[in-house]
Length: 585
Image 1 (cartoon, rainbow, N blue to C red):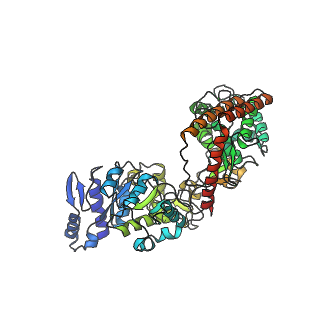
Image 2: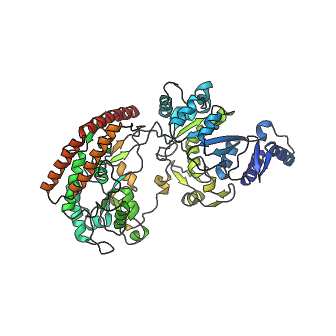
Image 3: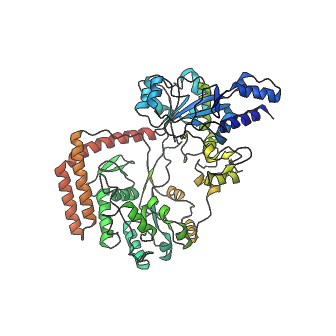
C-alpha cells in the first residue's frame, strides 16, 4: 500500500468517528470523545510500512474554514475530504461562525474565511487586521496564478471596496467571464403549446396578436379540468409593493425594463421611466391588462386572490399564459399533464425584448478571503486557486473528475453513470474509491467561485451548469415538448432566449440608500395611491373609464408628493447607470 493511500485510509477511519460538531486543535483529532495526537497517524504509518515518515508527510494540516453561509460545524467528511487530503494533505474544519463577534474580538476567524456579504463585519475584519493582503509577498502571483489571470475584474472590485486600503483581500462569489452572460430565464413567455399547435402556430409579433391568440385558445378550451371558466392570465395582489406587481412584470417581459423604486429602469440607455410617465411602460402594460379584462381573458378574481390561489388555477389548466416561468411551465408541466400531452413552453412575440438578468465579472457579495493569522497562507491560496480552475469548480459541484464526470473527445462535459446517479439522487451511497453518502461528502462551506452559468474554458463552449450540458439534456418529456423543440430549433428555454433579443440587465453591487423619514412618509402615500388605482384601472369597464381612473391616479399621486419621489428615483437611476457602465467597460 502506498503512503498516500495509507494516509487516506487512516484519515477516513478517523474522521468517520469524529463527533459531528466537535472542534479539534491543529495537532489533534477527536475520536469517540478521545483526543488523539496527529503524530499517532505517523507512528501508525511507520509501524505498518516499516518506513520512516518525514515531517512533511507525517501529518495532515488542519485548516479552519470560517463561513457565514453554512449551518455545518465540524470536520469535512466523505469524498471531498478525501480530495483535500490527497491533493493538499489538508483536513478542513468547518466553523459556521455562530458568533462572528467573538471571533473578531479574539482576533482570529479562521484560515480561509468566507463572508456572506461585504458588510460591516467584513470591513471590521479589515480594520482589525484580520484579513490577509493577497498581494503581499507575491502570494497571489505565486500561489494564485489562475485567479490572477482569469478574475482580474473581481480582484479589482475587491480592491475598490476598501479604497482607503488599496489592497486586495479576496474576491466575490459567482464570477463570470463575460458581462453579457445571463442567468436562467425569468421572463420565459410560457403558453399552452398544445393549444397553440392545435390552432396551427399563428404568428405572434406583438401584444395585439397575442390577444387574438388568447381569444382563439378560449374558443377551443373554454373550461378547465374542473369545469371552471378559463382565462389567458390570472394575477395576484399579495406581492404588491410600490406598484401593482404583475404590471411591472409584464413591462420587464415585453420592454426589458427592470423594476426600480417607483418606476422602471432601462439598462441599455440608463433611462428611468416613472410609474406615471405618459406612454411609459407601466401605463402601457396597465392598459393591456385592462384590454384583456374587458375581453374576458383576465381572471376577475385577480385583485382579491393570493399567489397560491392563482397557482391552483394554473395547475387545473385554467390559464393559457404566464410571462414568468416559475408560475408557468415549471408549475404546469407535471407528470399528469405530460401524460395527456398538455404542455406549456416559450413563445416570445417578435417585438418583445425581455429583461435577462446578467451575472457579474466582479462577483457577488459572498467573499473568499484568507485570515491574516493563518500559519499556512500559501496553502490556503493554493486551495482557493484550485477551486477556481475548471477541474476544481466541477469537482466542487459534482465530485472528482474521471469518477463522476469527464470530457468527451469533442470537449463536451458528461457524467459517468455514477456521477449522473449522484446528481439526481444526492443520497446515493458510494462504494469503492469513495465511500459514504454523496451529499454528505459534498463541500460544506457553501460558497462557489465561478457562477454555475459561467463559461468553462476547458469545455466545448459549455458552462459549469450540468442542466445545459449537451450530454445531459434529456429526451423530450412528451410529444408536445418534442414539437416545441422541432418548431423552435432549440432544446432548452435558455437556448431559445439566447437566440432572441433580450435586454441584459448587468449585475452590479447597487444598494438602495436609506430614505429620510419625511421622504419615506411621502413615498408610502404615493405608492398606496398607485397600487390602489392601478387595480381600479385594470377593472375599468371601458376605455373612457380607464382614462378617468389613470387621471385620478396621477392627480392623487401628485397631491401626495410624486415629484419629490421622482427626483430621488432619477438620482438613483443615474448612480445605477454609472455602476453598470463601470461593469461593462
